[in-house]
Image (tube, rainbow, N blue to C red; front, side, top):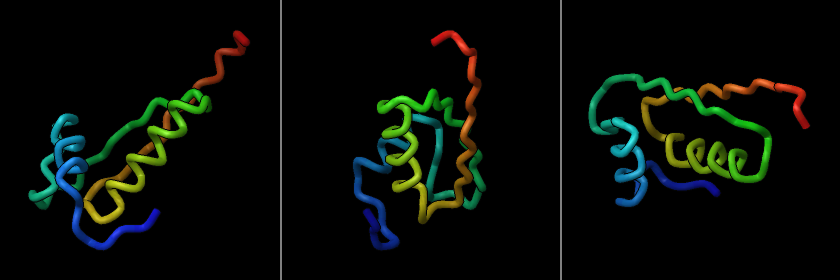
Length: 68
């Protein structure tokens, strides 16, 4: 899903909930813990989509515990 350069209000609220002020010129770095399951993969895709036009860098954090 591609968007234009403006974020919708819900995107701004979601980012603000993580302490990210998209109106600032700060390059935010976000670490996303991703298990590889459907829910964490969906979270990663949503965050990637809403941060595309922001000064934000996403980092995926994955650790295979070998439990399953």
